[in-house]
Length: 227
Image 1 (spheres, rainbow, N blue to C red):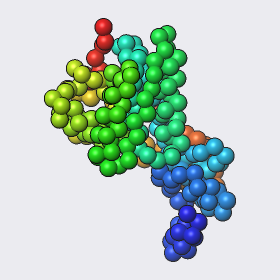
Image 2: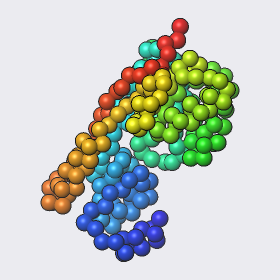
Image 3: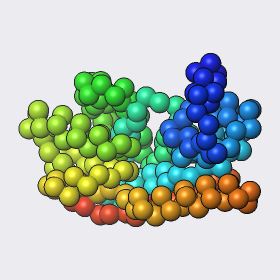
Image 4: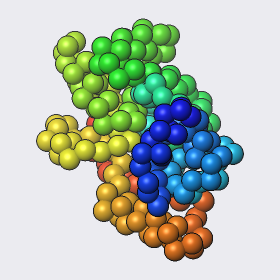
């Protein structure tokens, strides 16, 4: 992306850049050119730019523990088709919880290519494998809608046929029945943390290389205990 980034920075002059959901190549370019920036997300290996994000690894590990305690041994992980360090940390956290539990389980990665039909096709393939998932973990709020809509086509429901946990949250979750088990980060607190990092950067103060905020776990009614 070097050519496009050269043009963007030539046309726009700012004291600090916020890199939101930027892949490794973009992070490398900002680091190589020593341009003041803060990564809103996980920094990749070898990147020393300060970063701020939710602790996706911890959230996914906790979600895996919740599912394991409810006897779910086969879990599907819905992920967008993007190579972001935060998503990699999510997959590692969930696999550690499921695969290293007392009764070892399996994690099926279900790729979402943004197109809603691709998510449905991925779900259909996942549920046709041997030992299909009995629970799903969504990494984006849109996955919640995709799963509910897909199940409705077959007159299936959460959690009767399949359990579901969302690692993200939107306000419209409060209108869903049954309530969705999810993880919630207060956007105001997140914004304050980001502003503190920006202020420290502009005042030439030391900024923490990687700061992870732990979301709150909100227990809903979307996880069923298997017997």
